[in-house]
Image 1 (cartoon, rainbow, N blue to C red):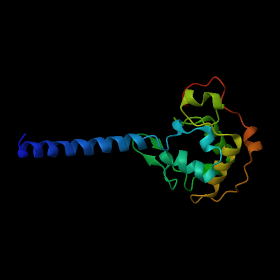
Image 2: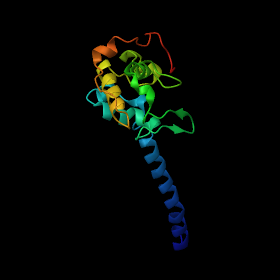
Image 3: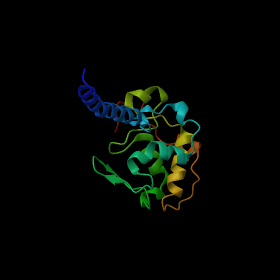
Image 4: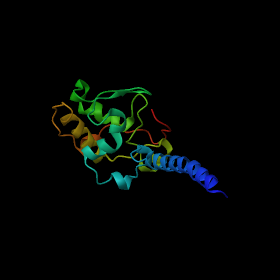
Length: 160
């Protein structure tokens, strides 16, 4: 093989290698914070802020400003609906307008492709939402309060 042929092969191989590396990097990060790939063990020790960052901010954005594009994700910053902790907790528990329910029993987590959050975790994320992003509501929601709310039926299949 001539020196020119070898250089041509290397020149063609370099872009292919770069493309493969980019595809691999994109695939590796594609599910990094996707709620459907969040295990209960992984979420178990997270604070309300960490749960928001890991699960909620993908749609509602880091500052709670919401987004419009492939879907409509309402803003949480300065949201008057957050005055009712029950409204927020029921939304997280049961889902709303395409948002998956996060209060399903842990054994149904894979059926809906949503992470399972305990009542304590839901209380933590509700308290975080109600006391951040220009929301100045009391952060006094408890797991006992969340437990008293209606939870998704055990036969629920798919996001609501």
